[in-house]
Amino acid sequence: MNRQRRDGIDPVARSRARRRALQAVYAMQLSGVDAKNAIAQFAHEQAREPADLVYFEDLVRGVGGHHRELDAALAPFLDRNVEEVDAIERAMLRIAAYELLHRLDVPYRVVIDEALNTVKRFGSEHGHTYVNGVLDRAAAEWRSAEAQGARR
Image 1 (spheres, rainbow, N blue to C red):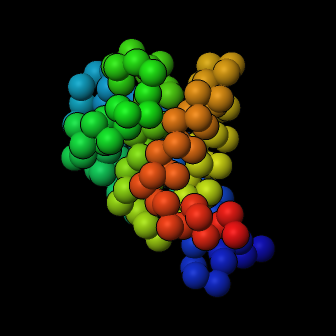
Image 2: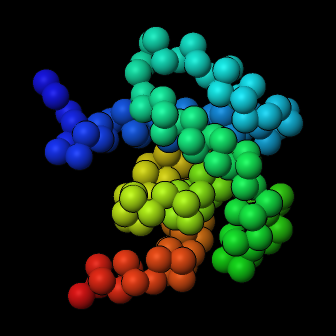
């Protein structure tokens, strides 16, 4: 069965790419490994459970290359320093911020929904609530035209 949409995007493969990116960004945060090595560490997962590898690599490289910019952009929406946010939630916030700011081809609602589902799977019991609050406010500012159009 072909899961691809008309635009050629396989939503299941994209979800797997985000989950794998979360694991890679989490590893980068804990070990200090760079994006290239984090991508290599998770390449073995591709044979077992195919994901959108191009998207996975874009997310990991994007967060790796822009993490200071992403942290600064997220700061007004956080109630604490970004380094004090739980490591899983911090990794997901960085990935979602990258998507919201740099992947304008992905609707903001998809970014938020995918982030929440991923944090529910890997994060703390109520981590998704925190992530939802931060991303809702960030998306309303960063993608205001899109958010306002969705409300109409």
